[in-house]
Image (cartoon, rainbow, N blue to C red; front, side):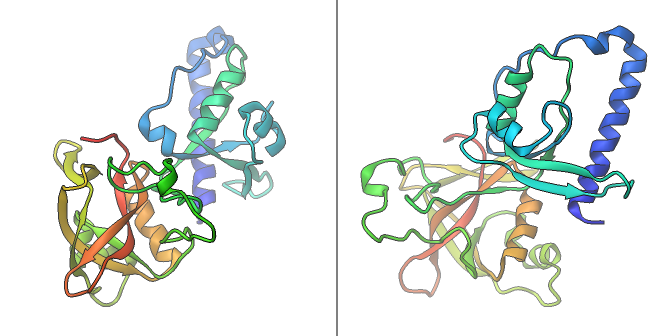
Length: 267
């Protein structure tokens, strides 16, 4: 079963749970939806699927209600019942908030499914997003001059990644990528980050730090978009992919690479 089919199953389960809740609560199902408050830091960076139904019956309607400049991407999935395929649109967290605000006061309840994938949105016009609080990609000196290219590019492969947690262990990385051989990791370090923990100290989290802070770890060259996607699903949308300068041991100069940054502010 592919990803969209699994997501459709989740959507159907959600609908069934909502139906059961309606049976228990009776008339309260007709109460207008409350206005949403704000997005968490995680939701701001997350991607969602919204099911096309009710007033959200087309990508153009979703674009209009969410005040988006672009039409959202359409996704289809057969789900459990092949005779009744479901259709979704990919939206951002901010679009989700805008839709909820637009639908506040109505009795319609949209179906949202979080795509639990680390966001990767590398700008072609500036260094954004980049590890380090001292780097403001919106400043003129960090924006593109004539014909300037910022590396790594969004769809550039192979691409170097800096690992600092469980992925920095060769056996773990091999398992995540389904490799038959132990991958070659190279000792490395980056500046502009600070390591913290979350989940009761269970997980390591790299957040922005000052320019003179240093984090030691390992570098690995990710071969393809498929490999990268597996790593992004492993890290989940608690993290985002950002640019960084990787100092690889025994390699002259700086390697322009990527790293998973925890979705938080500076520590």
